[in-house]
Length: 125
Image (cartoon, rainbow, N blue to C red):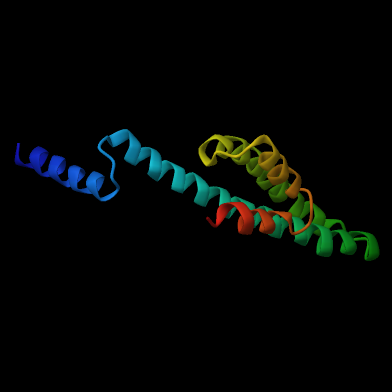
């Protein structure tokens, strides 16, 4: 019984710190921050993998006739790209993005250095 009372008091203290009076709002805030951080990480990794694929692996493939690097970087980049698209669509509602903003975020995924722009402009707020 003491543990339950202690947990309730601890929860009320946390909620008052964030000016929330319901558990769901606090969880929603935490979920929103976690989702945004996960998207930032995926965005960074997708951008780096795209740059490596475009400016290192592809020239090696065509100038040295060695497709090994494209094969090695292609699959991880494809997975990160799909994850980026899915997370952007899911995050649209949580970040209150308009359709125009979502379009910019999605188009940035196919432009070199675009994901870094998205991180700077829309995610570091």
